[in-house]
Image 1 (cartoon, rainbow, N blue to C red):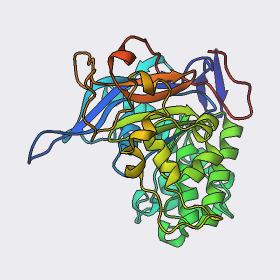
Image 2: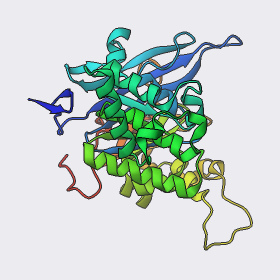
Image 3: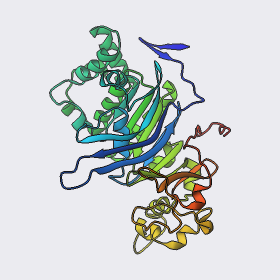
Length: 375
């Protein structure tokens, strides 16, 4: 059954299935000085309707490339899809975005899936008014005239807390503060009422007070519009307050995947534990902070992993592969994202101990404040 939302008609979403599911996605870039650079290598994740998935990791780990690949925003060349699928519940049914023609992707981009970026000043065109830029997106995806598009734009600006939207519609980006420019970006992204919002570090350039306001705004809009969010960030405090499920990435791969409660209560991969240990504590004085590498390179940390005494080894790109490796054919055959405990996945070397047990794809319908789904 379809449902109407303003001038749009959306197919009723099946909330028992992921809205979007990334399967073994690999993206690489040309390198004139050597072999191709593998930015994303076998990423797996899923997002359900009304769910927030936080994608966490340090700069360069592949978070943004994964999100931009969803909308074909990675320039090709130099970028290239090496393998994988991105299955999405479009208004025309379940489709693979990786193989979708560019004409069809343009219908998805900004309409069913929208994206906001971390620096609004570089994303807004300085020579066009705010209204021109929001109205353009509305006219592109909705069957409305200019006057109605302006009315929708004003309503969208009002929804995100921009005062006097009728007047500010005629203003230029430089006439807005950083926080207001980010609200404009959110208004533009949500004007067409997308099913999925890709938020790429949307508060990085903002001060703490404005950051909290923007995140609260996104939570409120998500509740009102039943929208799914992929929140890309490196701030674990933001994750703790806003995420339902957390995906931790390093070197283009997912190293841990779990509900927000499980990840913070019981981080299993040494890299995740290193991230958490490196955060300064306000009530605890240390002469120096713990570094991530100190945790990852500590052999004693491996014993904390379930099955660590039976040959289960956490994957890390700088480690020597274990002697009992049992790789499968193909790229990344020595690595597996394994469900090491119920609803908790960890990136492991594919040792014989791991290869003997099948593992399902990372798939969690968990939402904070709702009963956990039965696996």
